[in-house]
Length: 84
Image 1 (tube, helix red, strand yellow):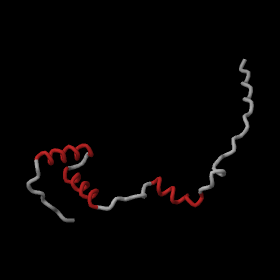
Image 2 (tube, one colour; image 1 turned 90 degrees about the vertical axis):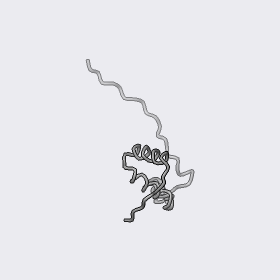
Image 3 (cartoon, one colour; image 1 turned 60 degrees about the vertical axis):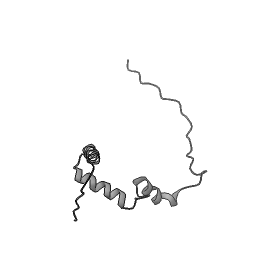
Image 4 (cartoon, helix red, strand yellow; image 1 turned 180 degrees about the vertical axis):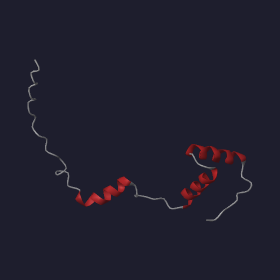
């Protein structure tokens, strides 16, 4: 892995980096790595769990008339047991 040194960093930026790192529970160095990674790597689109499930079952999707489940008729409730 490579290392870099950032010179002439404004103190307010350093303070914000320190606060943000503390909020995430990791070091300033890790926070800087995460910021660089998020800003430079392409965004992952459609790779979330819900999107994966939707893609997997998209072919099984039924038409609107088939989406309706039959509602069973109501039955009378049973009699309560006699506990006397």
